[in-house]
Image (tube, rainbow, N blue to C red; front, side, top):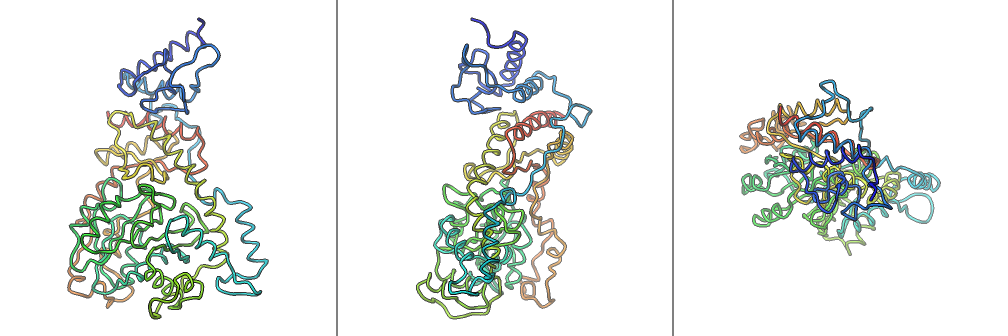
Length: 502
């Protein structure tokens, strides 16, 4: 039977796969010459092979050139003859740097334009009333569709993720004398919302998921603890089963901050729907965007009414009163975080594209994970629910900060940049946090005996600092092609083993 490829190609394929086999990184099964695209046991370089075997005669191998070269590099590395790194003068994986863009704006189109034009045409930019007989409906439509998508009873649209946090904290009746536990690595808005309420922030360490460590939450609980902020960072859901278990045992509410994880889920449920109250951001760096924007969700009617009143100067508008079936509480002092119809219109269009965005970026992330998980010694970011992760970045870890720095430098030279975890800050070492600076020296958060005694700084989060110095990740976006993800896989497979051996 004639071979469906030339003898030199057969030789190199066999050599490549011998290298894979010797490295112990794949099990060859049902493939006479076993192209790497059929290595179904590891998923490495898989292009969707459904046969699991090589077909002679009518069908050629579906191994493409990029996969063949990546396999050759891996085999060479396994045999002790690793491809020369670009940082040392070798040929880079890509000719031009790979750069991830913004999620939501990548799908902007006629839908967003029509929504904006409709607001201008009807001259009704304010959400509650305007010219004409019919009330404006963009924000109301967004709230209704968002609640349905997040599988919650209520949704409230606000001006930003920071506004959503302040509103949710107020809804939970947090104030002076209360303590709120939050992760040491998160965005400034979490700390600010607690302090602006007059409460005391208590930092818990993160684990290797980059999210708050449930065990450290339990260690930080005191009789004054009234709220836990479970922040789903960099698209990765926190370990909600354990967090909710701890919270329930101490009768403490849980606020889910989903600003960086809109579209992610935990064990089949959208993040934000598991705790007592959840918040989201639609700022430009988030999954869907209107430039700025936010939302609060809950299943609790009293929490929703408090949130609605707080975001609108203490008032309860007829639409929300109707949703509640009547007011449950008295009016209260509040802020003004009402969303405009322009923002609401854009978010209606964006929300209808959310699943498309999430499906695309998750597919890219899974191709990368499948292509690197068989690397000997590979350390990946902890994923409490791998199926629910958003997939906005793929992180690999190292035993030391020095190894991580070498990896980042080498990946940059390959034109597949990797960076330290971003989008947040190690708050206990931020100057205004460490020195407890507020808008007024008599601010109640730090004037009580407990507030004066609390000490922030590096000594309160050594594990967080260590973890974040040893992980580096490649960011993804919904526009990445299969070729882009192949390049990410090839670069990591080329660089990671050599960094470990150095």
